[in-house]
Length: 225
Image (cartoon, rainbow, N blue to C red):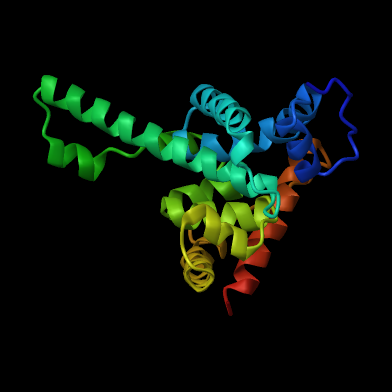
C-alpha cells in the first residue's frame, strides 16, 4: 500500500487514481474537497443538515469502497455525484414509506397528506431567506431538473457528464435545462421571490451577490438552449 502524502495540486482524477492504488491520503484530500459541496447539494434535497451530512458521509464511504470501478476518463465529481444522487433518491423513498406508514397508523387521509403536506426540503427552504437562489430552485423544480442545474452552475459539470449522472442523453439534458430555466424565469424576475442585493460586503452578502448574478445568468440563458 502506498504511504506517500497526496499533493494538494493534484487534480481530483489524479487523486482518485492514487487512492485506488492504496494511497489513503489521496482519498482524504478528495473528502476534504467534496465534503461541503456534497452536504450543500444533499441538504436542499433532504431539508435536513444532519441527514445531508450522513448521506455525504455514506457517499464518500461508498466511493472509497468502489474506487476500483472509477473510470478516470470521466470527472471524479461526476462519478461522486452519481453516487450521492442515488443514495438521496433511496433515502427519499424510505422517508416517503415511513411517512405513509405513520399516516396509516394515525388514521390520516393519505390523499390529503400527499396534496397538502410539503416535502421535508421544502419545509426547511420556506423557513429560510427567500433570497437564497438554490432554495428557490429546489422549491420550483423537480429532482432531475434541480440536479441538472446544480451540477451545471454550482459544480461546473459539462452537459455530457450530467447526462451520465442522470442516465439520459445529452440532447435530453439540454432540453431539460432549457425547460428548467424557462420555468424559473418568472420566479427569478420577481414573482414573489426577488433576490435582493445586500448592502454589506459580508461573506453572507457576497454569497447573496453571487446568487443574484447566477439568477440573472439563468434568466439570460432561458432565451436559448
